[in-house]
Length: 331
Picture (cartoon, rainbow, N blue to C red):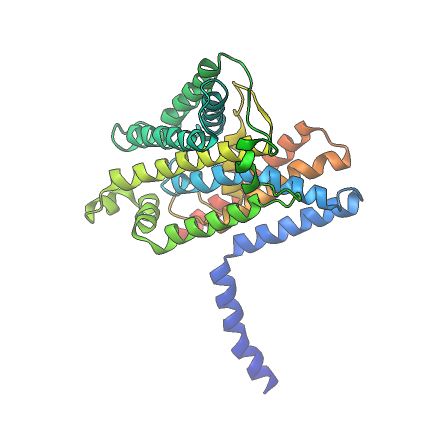
């Protein structure tokens, strides 16, 4: 009887493992292992402030990563999200500091700029058929220069939480220092996971990455849905700009270059295939938390920031290798 019960239970475990996904499970266990390692190696790491710092480092990278997940699933890439994040935040801050716009309108302007550049990227890739690498590389340079032009290379400050217009910061940090931004990040991640897996646009975006030509021949407007993926990426880059402005008091023009690498690394570590057609928002979020934990934890064991780049590179190479192996198995 006991043997029969074990045999009956085995398919349920296999079904659960299949629904969660082996790579997401591995990434989740890796996240726990990294956190435990830093906790053992450094006693100061085991504090509430450290956990808050990990969340703070997750917000803007997390938003960028959620958006670019949709682009990578189509088989494309968006290199502009890092500089676009800072560019949108610089524009919003300039509108507030120089022109006296209320912060609510400034945040709407931030979102509008992000959506505009996302649409521009989408049109260049889907209509003009430019390689996504080249198109978004150009946009990366444009947005980096635009932020400096608009601010005249001067730093930009956003209202503090104690100011009248500082209410937006409570979306990311409550007055009692609770990281409310993690709630916003998780809510938006759930919404976008539903969009990707349970709606027609999400299914079309997934099918674009699997086989663009077959999707086109089946009557799907591939230009429309591919363009939508880049619009989503641009919109979430703008949200990342708001999160960055809410987390840090001063923004410097000419920065943001390199943020996209952290976001893309999180996406790939989370199991989204660079070949397209395979990916999940949940996996992306796990990958982002690994990146944030490494970023915050390494200084606690007396390693300088450049070690983070080295270790992140190794992790990314391992993730891409696993992706390539899985792609070969699927084919």
